[in-house]
Image 1 (cartoon, one colour):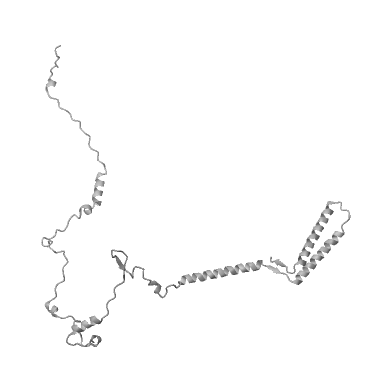
Image 2 (cartoon, helix red, strand yellow; image 1 turned 90 degrees about the horizontal axis):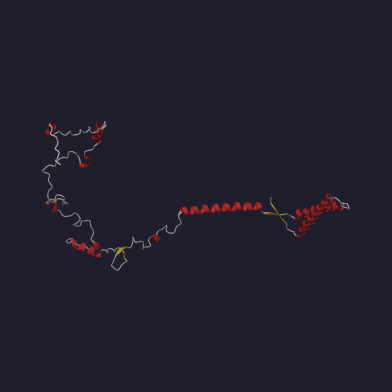
Length: 256
């Protein structure tokens, strides 16, 4: 089949212009200027990068060689160096050592003083390893210097004070217990009280026995029977008490 060609038109001959889509304006916050102004106010320019302006050093004050090394003090003048030290020559009032007089040569006098002087005592040390490691003996704690003190072994004042207070409290406690025991202790009755007590018990027994003898021969009621039993028990208890008092000469009673 023959190919169909597009119909030729005048609008197809001219090139068509492409219309680009127009973008909407970008969103900007209404608070943007106020936030920007606040950030500029609170910003510190030298916080991370140093101060804004630094004084430029002068080219004359450059770092010289050996300028930072320690320097020796300046030498004195020649006149000062010619002077002898004040204590090098002995004075007229100084006495020679051990009566040795040598006016012309004081060096010999100094030598004699050095020879006759006592030598310095070495510091006591302690060696504790094969390699020779040593340390001072006085500060090591091995020297018993604390036991040589005047107050060594003396009980402190606060300890003695506390012990005295404890002893005083113990004595007060014991005294209180003794008082309570004395209050609760048993009291010994005298012979007169014992005799009067014994007479009273016998008198009560006689009265109970008289009442018992007055009972009728025929006891036919419960009341009579109970009264008879009461008298018998009373007489029995009185007989027991009388026997106990007569048996024991010394009797104690408890304090109320």
